[in-house]
Length: 397
Ligand SMILES: Cc1ncc(COP(=O)(O)O)c(C=O)c1O
Image (tube, rainbow, N blue to C red; front, side, top):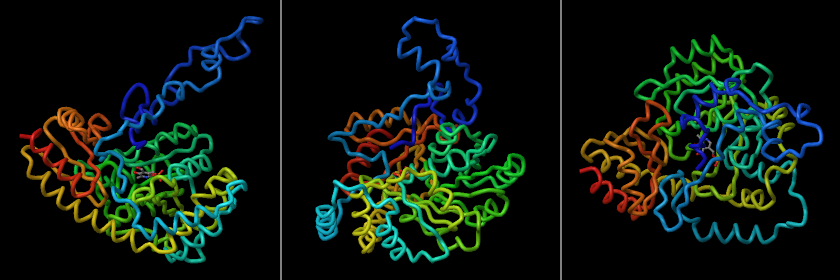
């Protein structure tokens, strides 16, 4: 979900969000210039007060997937194990929904700290998904003239949030093998002095894990905050969470969305208390609802099931990579996530053919030149993956 907001003029969200600010022309008069006594239509009013770059956007459209094999949004295909579900249900039944939630989400944070072994020297902030945390971080750092920098292609919500907050977005193209182009990153950081850098680790939509030494180089070169977004940590072999004490400008961002809990909308940020104290001022007072907080306490009390499901998904990922790689004309890119990026001869033909067979994947062709004819396929259950592979075999002869 959310990776391909239609940003009006182009589907390449990163470039458009970064470049369009200030370039679009608002044709409407300012509010004070409207004719006295003449009733204005809502459209006129909108045109006079809503920023042109916002008017130029289209709201993100989530593809309808009823009755389809849903392999487009990097969800975990497995339900919660029975005992975890029972504990969750019991905890939710006890929530006093007539009361506001705990604004500080103390119990949920304590459970998270215990589960991840987060040291007392680090602070934690919870969000309504990591999407909200990206928004909070961006709005806290969006001083006039401030720059957000990220490699491209990457998670498009970084550039979108820069646009919402009026921050200038600078995208630095990845190398053709999707590794960080360190020379280009260093010179862009030197030139732009970004207040905020986002590195998705592993990266979406390419799926690869950047070299840790390249991310470290970015941390050393950056004059501001570097967010290492570990949305796919459960499927990767590395993390910067244990490295927080080494880097005062590092914030590690995570979500439970990819490990089986996309519906509860919970993300977390871990960083030095000085950063979290500032971000805490920007969030809405009750940003994480009481049901999610109660659920988080149960979920983090025992995380063994998360690791077990992630390991089953990694095994299926390996099977998908091998089978997709045998399709004529297909190139499979290395992945440390719960999805596989594959280049085919014609992404639209394969996407449409899959859709006609009730299988939904993501066609990322057109998002960025490096993604030409690429499909992003979420790893499903073994049965779902069998259906996908059979359909691909028909479509990629
Ligand atoms: C790299 C990355 N960061 C953040 C998110 C947002 O996750 P959440 O569901 O927690 O908002 C996604 C979702 O696809 C993602 O790919």
